[in-house]
Amino acid sequence: MPPSAERALLVGVYLTTRSGSSFSAPGNPARNTEESLEELKILAESAGAEVTGALIQARPALDPATLIGSGKVAEIEAQVAADKIQTVIFDHELTPTQLRNLERRIDAKILDRTQLILDIFARRARTSEGQLQVELAQLNYLLPRLAGRGTQMSRLGGGIGTRGPGETQLETDRRRIGQRIAKLRSELERVRATRGVQRSQRQAVPLSTVSLVGYTNAGKSTLFNRLTGAGVLADAKMFATLDPIVRQIRLPSQRRVLISDTVGFIRNLPTTLVDAFRATLEEVTAAALLLHVVDVTSPEAAEQTAHVMKVLAEIGAETTPQLLILNKSDLLPEAERVQDLATLTHRLLGETARQNATEAALVSAQTGAGIPELLAKIDKTLVQDPVNRRCFRLPLAEGRALHLLHERAAVVSQRYAENYCEVVADVPLSIAAKLSEFAVEE
Image (cartoon, rainbow, N blue to C red; front, side, top):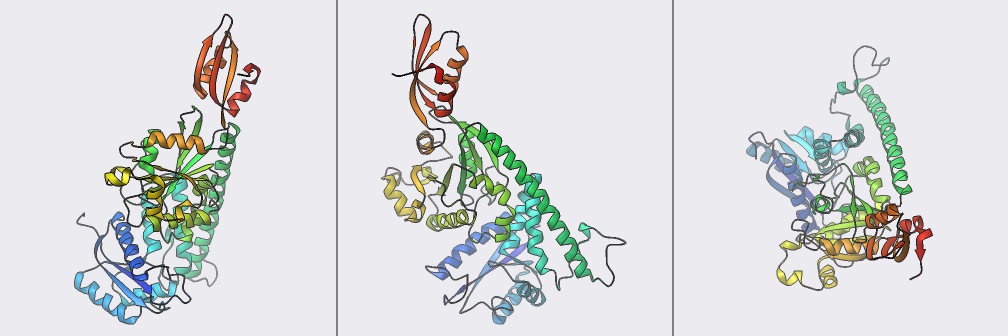
């Protein structure tokens, strides 16, 4: 940990009753909160913090003034002073009132889960599109929280003529943020329109699109690199990949498909992020097949899979066919690697993952184990541009047609006669249509 790392304290809360709160969770609430705090710790460390401890508060209901109650706030005050803590991070999204009250009581920077994720996103965004989306999410989060914080938005504009008659600084800030939000949304609409044109151009050539989805840190980018050789950053830190990357791969049938890598999902993914990253997530909604990557070594694999399914439902992709990718098989005991795949899937994930998954594949993106079988299953599962075995009789002068078959189909046999070449191949429908004048019945 670098010497300049902020010392941070994590705070979680769970309800002892299930009445009337969106934070009530099925199963063991205390265990759910512990798991969520473990994830929050990884997020904080990804943002460069040094986590010094964590507190969990059990309450019958969330305190509208401070979330955790005045007694626990006093305990945090004392711990902040004793341990020289600079930042207190809450595992729940704080309301503007809660944030203001906590800042008045605690002599440290107060963040919630949403702010922390936004900070990580801001660090990781590399393309102009990613930066636009992050800024939009940040401003949407900030707008209702301006009151009482003395927030100065000089970076959005300033100087003579920026304030109306009798307009307060707060009103000026709100107006500027509103104007900036409108501009960002307009720019992102242009991004969406451009993506739509690019997507239409891709669809004009019948290439199916396959999207990698999954919980953050499940190994999506490593798998993407294994399949495409793209060299995308594959980092153990959360949200290493923010911007969608599309590459072309060739399946065993020789047909080509487009595969995209997207941002990883996470529990309690802020709504502002889902909305802001809608342009990116459209790559998922437009896909013909989702490769749902799961870290089979994670003790929370079932819960993580359920969270991914929830986000897919939020963006309208819950009915898209899925191929379940059980990744990191190299870390499993030998007895589990040779276990029946259906049994292993059910034991690890229960019924949740099978909602839309037509097949499952056990792979190691790190070592390459199971990748040929995965490609064969993608080939089998994709329904667009289906592959059928056809026979073609090509005049010897039709070298271009023969090259097309070798390039875009899986040639089974090839036989030369006096003035023609007879080729039997497993051919995508689009290629068979182009060569229909040479087709013969076997």
